[in-house]
Amino acid sequence: MKMQSAGVLTPSFIDFAIPSSFARETLYYPIEYGKFFCDSSYYIERNYLDQYALVFVCSGSLNIRLEGREGKVEKNQVILLDCRVPQTYWCTEETEFLWFHFDGCNTAGYTKFLWDKFGSTILTPEDPEQIEKCFEQMFYYLKSDTINEHMISLQISQILANLASSESTVVGSKVFNPVIHHIREHFDEEIMLDDLMEICGLSKSYFIREFKKQVGSTPHEYLLAYRLRQAKQMLQISAQSIEEIAEACGFNSTSHFARAFKKENQMTPTDFRNIQF
Image (cartoon, rainbow, N blue to C red; front, side, top):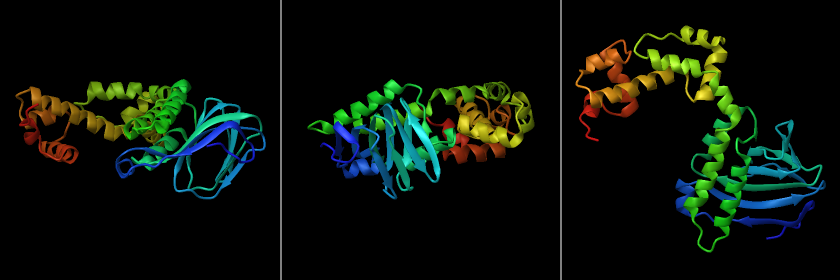
């Protein structure tokens, strides 16, 4: 479908998807999608749309105003938008971009995760060529005679995963590699937060906030998860008692271990030990 809007040039197109009830309940699903070639007269101002949007700039740049702040999306960058928030975007030069509106599969949660991680709606992917390929592949599936909603959802998932794995995330997480190494080497000992802060030389509030942003959990949550992981292995491959495993994994009591294990796995350590894999 060709566009007639001001600033949208040939061979731009827009099209619409009709997701099934299964896709709406279970998958990521696109709603509208297109590829725009625009000149400097392109200008969009929107107050509300109950959808999310992903935009990939192929060439040129796209300006955006969101909640009083302005930014510029350059070539090979992505913008991830909650369209329920008033927004304005426009071009000041010839610009080509791919876009789609979407929802489903806890889109809100993943969107918040990416915004919190990068502190921006403008994201720089580690592999922009792969992002562009996912857009094009999704459009291909959407235009097929028999629409494969599972493969369409997969392309959206791959775009989000690529964004979450961008170079800035990898570099940022390296700061905490010594902390993670220390936890893995000493999980069976008492580990204090001050000890972990000293390893990377950060203040307490900054350390906890950045660790969670880069690693995905607080230092305490990571330590607990690693101890429970080791406990699972020991329950399956060793003949040690529950008490011995609790102590070997750094828990200060068997009851503490049992409570933490059941909260995480919805079963007792003994029940888990009895499972045959």
